[in-house]
Image (spheres, rainbow, N blue to C red):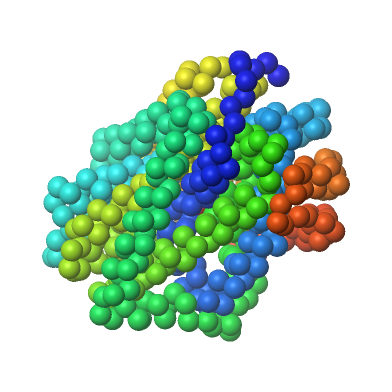
Amino acid sequence: MEKTGQREQWGSRLGFILATAGSAIGLGNIWRFPYAAGENGGAAFIIIYLIAVILIGFPLMCTEVALGRKTQKNPVGAFSALAPGKPWRIVGMLIVIVAAFILSYYSIIGGWSLAYMTKSVAAGFKPGVNYEELFGGHISKIGEPILWHGLFMILTLAIIESGVIKGIQKWSKILMPSLFFLLIAMAIRSLTLPGASGGIEFFLKPDFSKITFSTIQAAISQAFYSLSIGMGPLITYGSYLSRDDNITDNVGWVAGMDTLVAIIAGLAIFPAVFAMGYDPDAGAGLAFITLPAVFSQMPGGSVFGFIFFLLLSVAALTSSMSLLEVVVAWLIDERGWERKKASIGLGIIVFIIGLPATLGYSVLSDVKFLGMDLLDTYDFITNNMVLPITGLFTCLFAAYVWKTENVMEEINNPKGKISFGSLYRILIMVIIPIAVCFIMIMNLIEKFGA
Ligand code: PHE
């Protein structure tokens, strides 16, 4: 399609690795993974998760990156370049739309995070405050959460508007090392608190009796979400990767870093939660209610509270950048828009898509879908329903339309330390599609109760 000028490329291998790790490392690592592990058998869950990452996540990530690099296009362009005609274009379109929806609620949570960061400076985390009420009070206001959501979107679009090298790569190189550093500092503080061992036990103690079909489902879904599979960032970031760079080794780094951060996050969070005598929790409740209460009891708590919310904001920002880039790349490649106009225009649209979900705790609190508020509904529809579908179609596309030998040629060229052979063929043609269908069916049974 028409392009204005040359397509940008990452300045270095590190640029691609850090930007893609930035997409992968997000709320999924910090608040989903640790709790999923603790609840589902600790180290036993982590082993299953690792198997899912190696056998399902890694091959699919390489496939998506290869699809982007081969076609040098956004998801819509990439599918249609290799299979002209409507049906596959629709899959690409679905990916782009879903990226916009995830971004809209990711930005709301990013906004909460920024708000709590400023709260930790302004008021600190003091004992005697009811943090559940504080959080409820914050999200059920009208103006404030909208303002923070808007601010978070402005940060995201400002980076994307500056382009692949001057925006995404530059900021990933600053933000990702900072995130590692802050997380390690938190883990050291948390692990050295008296009473930390209860948290380590909750998070890591292997309990193989907890491994059931639903644990396996949880591990596979977590791998999909955490590695940003089926949502477009891998295709899009792959389209800026040079033909001289090897795909498998680079993606291996990303998957490894993502897993490491998830594990360190568990070690940063649960020892402190248990040391201060709180119960573990999942999701927003853990980050915005339990942890502030934990910080309020901890020596140096306000500083660590600030560090935590800074870390959460950074993790959310690098993921949201990758989501906005998916949609922006589509407008640039397929519709010939200028980057600046595309970033600002889409930033505003995504902000508006997020508004109902922001208001889901105030004006629209009566609107429920299967008992879920609007933000949870966005999350449920995108992650539990659409993501497995786009993941499945991507896999079928590679296996039966683009064909495994062609995918492998792209992936193995130039050859890296890891190269793909007949195992890849079996995984992508049979095992992964079955695994994805399995999680789809389990999701439906869980939600709609059979
Ligand atoms: N991988 C991100 C996380 O773990 C979430 C995400 C999904 C980001 C899809 C981009 C695309 O939080």
